[in-house]
Amino acid sequence: MFRKIKAFFKLSGSMRRLVWEAYVLLAWARIQKAKPFAKIAPGLGAPMFETPLTGLNRDQIAMIRSISKAVMIAAKYTLWESSCLVMAVAAMKMLERRHIESTLYMGTAKNEQGQLMAHAWLRSGKLIVTGADTMDQYTVVGVFGKRCPEKGAGEIVYNT
View (tube, helix red, strand yellow):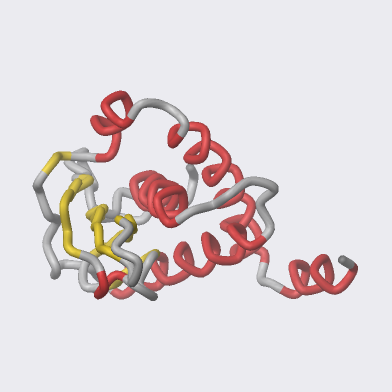
């Protein structure tokens, strides 16, 4: 336990803040997951819409990578299950707060026993933010694009 705390404090201040934000949003996303999908779907973005693969600047790419890392770190230490969907929704919310567009993908596949499996992953630009490890094994069955149409869309907002 002491090593984990020590490792946390070795992170930069900005990364520690992102990890805390990710932890809180993982809890929020886990609560959302418990609701009927029809109730949470509108908050995931426009159905069957994919955001562009291009158009990110260097600062946005750096922020996306930092958010991805923060979500992965925080998910290891949650007291609840932080599944692929929970991580994708939390990361989507973190990107949305910074006016960075993203696309949530949901896929299905069958395992060796013929049972249906599901997976979710999040993409922003060309970067896979969460769920990259097994996404190629799944057939996409749902897509939700989170647009950021407000004035200043695409800019990173640090005072959120």
